[in-house]
Image (cartoon, rainbow, N blue to C red; front, side, top):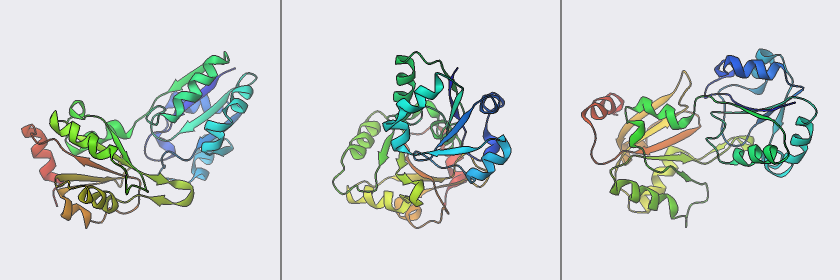
Length: 243
């Protein structure tokens, strides 16, 4: 029997790969990890399309009670569905390791990730530096600023992932992220993004003040600070997103 870790991509129930869909249909139980990101459709749409009952899996189940899932996977196929790609959030590597330690076969089915979807901005993927997350409670948080400054020193782009709590429908907004940067004396051109990978994605480029006051609709969101020196193609594409 096997534990399947399946990336769902960034949009809706149809973003699943054919391989991932096949593994879901062969599984006795299917769980949806619901705390690291958000799909652009309700769980009911997944159930209707996959033809399977899908159980929500919060952080406590995936990280705290993972041994129960591993135990089940010793006897039957179990699928855990993960928005985006399986390992875009580091929380899932522990589940992978736990299964391996218990001699449970694990199969990973990859999919699209925010880490690659940002390419639609025109910024070259290989020029991104270290990624940083900005949490809800960020008054005394310094690490995202340090990461940004380190990336700027090597002329690398910085991707900020903005905090979210899908269970409570809470998302750190692009405006809040920019206010955080401003309080830390950051003054850069920025790219705001919402719902990348979906049909109704939004990308906007401009000054921090311009982007801070722009309308991005619902989350999830991310914010990018481009490197100081850009390739001319990067500049051309960014201009298409400029406010």
